[in-house]
Image (cartoon, rainbow, N blue to C red; front, side, top):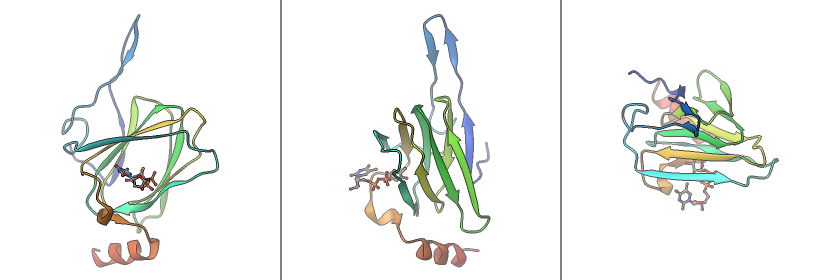
Length: 138
Ligand code: T46
């Protein structure tokens, strides 16, 4: 499977009389080995999370509950927005993509599955620095 810089991935939903079940297999459904999982919740409606890019980290985002919007910017093609609201549809994000998360519903739980342990020096927090780094590599 070839993965672009970002991509919606629809996961299998197994439904029976007991409800639904969805699963994720590393390196089959998502193109990386999983090193860390964290989740974001109880985000006030007016708050923005993210506002940074990662140098090396690959990420898969799932709206386990509720909904939120993610704006992605690769520094070249402009901004693409995704409104995530189905727990079986997640968003893969490759390294070197600027991201902003907002518009969280009150019940939103944003599950993040990522390829690296937490490292402060993997973050690019200044947008101008991000653009400079993108331009260096085109
Ligand atoms: C991302 C978006 C979607 C840790 O100590 N360990 C961790 O694994 C994480 C993710 C964070 N932290 C600490 C670092 C900060 O002191 O938790 C605090 C809040 O983290 P941050 O401001 O980075 O939170 P967000 O929501 O802006 O960003 C996070 C991830 O950091 C980032 O990778 O893409 O969620």
